[in-house]
Amino acid sequence: MHYELYIDVFFLINFMMDYMILTITGKILRRSVSHARLCTGALLGAFLTCVVLIMPIPYGFIKLVLFYGCVGVLMLKTGLDIPWSRMFIRAYALLYVSSFLLGGVFTFFQQYLRYGSLFFAFAIVSYYLVLGIWNLISYLARQNQYHCEVILRNGENMQKVKALIDTGNSLRDPLTGEPVSILSKETAKKLYGGDGETIFRFIPYHSIGKSQGVLPLVKLDRLEILKKDKQVIEHPYVAVSEDELSKDDYEMILNPDIL
Image 1: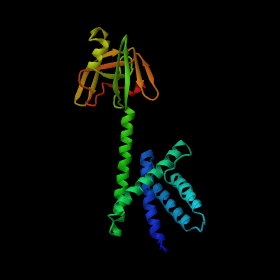
Image 2: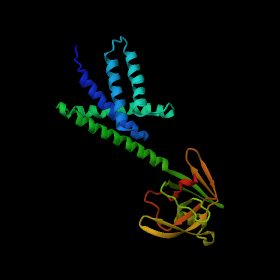
Image 3: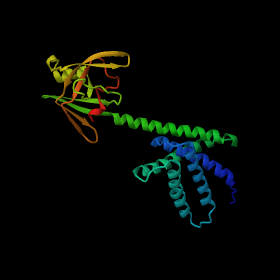
Image 4: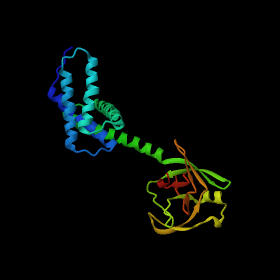
């Protein structure tokens, strides 16, 4: 069987795909690089791919090593300036996972491709779909990372509740400067039994929809965060919320500064 390969078209297609893959990988890794650098990396990748393809190498295995080894490494170093570290291993994996996803999405659209002029339009659609897939994966990973279970202890009373680690919570005790987490009123009643003598004082706060207000401040004996690496915080400050914290069933908002 005889095939004709137009090297200029092959180069252009590889350049475009390499640019998209580098851009996706850079966005995931939050690498701040210029478009010129991305173009340089994509041009180098496309050029080397063409060179390896036309080289008279009798063994296909050697070409695979050159394709997935040398070409990918040089693309990452040139296009994203990835340092030789654990990040490079992650970037290398992301490069080819992104390539696999982009190729799969584009192959799906290819069955509807009737005109050559639509090639680039479908390629761009595939790019945004893959980027959306990565963003969804990243969002789900963050959701899992910021949700946890905690054990609250006050004397002999103990409560196990769901908590949210909220990076937007910067509440602090104005007298001590200690970070303050927020606890639901119902959970506080179970821990303290509605004893008003446990309240240290009231602290000011402000939030969206409420310019200012005050919250009762209490002190727990102990707080245990049940994540992969269990963390124990002794005598943390907690403000008791009068309002419902969320509709997502969590009963505490952790201040990330206590971690």
